[in-house]
Length: 190
Image (tube, rainbow, N blue to C red):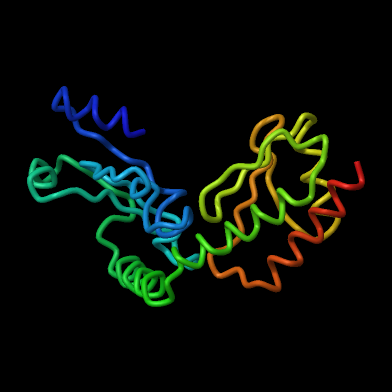
């Protein structure tokens, strides 16, 4: 991503970062771009912006870029919604005040450490940032997804052999222990 950003800078092209899924703490920083020190020209945000209560998304940019739009240039089905804006503002307050990015960093490190400790010949790699974790397997990820679901943990097979674990930013230590116990049991059942 850093190289793509540099190429955009070199050629005076706008760099747009889609942080719909990764933004607002999911990766352990407020935005995934923060890891690489990238400052996008346009930042797309959503999901967590609505605090899990209301669908809200936004395109963020500086005034120079935003002022390129004239009335009628852009339309939005839900744009200008005062309720959505109020919910987004409240969600941002919670994310910042409760230090959810820092919590995601801590919880994600704890989860990855626990996942790695449960060694299995079926696990090729465990990777992630914050609470966006992927387990690459040597067999179909759907098998592990089903085994975890049978133990009360929902995890999504995102590719044929990759399982995504993305717990909520408010996950506590007890829920982490439950997740890891279910994982150890599920991976051990193969």
